[in-house]
Figure 1 (cartoon, rainbow, N blue to C red):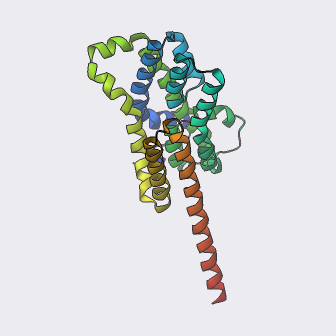
Figure 2 (cartoon, rainbow, N blue to C red):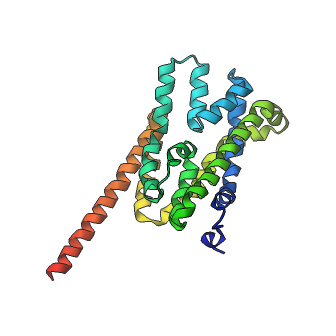
Length: 249
């Protein structure tokens, strides 16, 4: 049965939740890791949960906790957090064509994570316009709540879990990158996406190798976005020239 056929016309939010369930395999372990690291850095369990509730930005949260614990000035913490989240400037234009008119979208964008973007980018075009808002609400809400719940678990019991299963401490940081890789991998079937993703990966690796680890992700995202747009422009230009040639003939 296709995903479209399985969608509920009356409860699209429930369909969104059910299709976002696989994300929990990556969200919960990494959220547990964040909760544990936050408390080890001197934050209380409630503060760790508040960070996951209000910032909700994965890598930015780890950076935030580390910089605050190291005594970095507030302006630098805010600047670096915004820099890492600059990739959302790339996400928005790619989702915009599928967003139906609603005043709720600006509020729901708080739930736009890397994984939700990858899932929504694939699913929203397949859904009837009337179901898109509900679907996105259900998917984003489930992911957000699982992240908050995982953070609370890590903050309250993370130390005990790692002490009992030492290997868990080594595995947790890889859960979210592995999940995102699974979501992105199907895009390599497209030449345009393959070029953009390959350039992004190579740029991130090169910047990291050069020691620019703090800006590797946002700068690599910008390189990938530019490549994506340039390939689109070039393809459109070729198509236009081909059409003009046909008219002359």
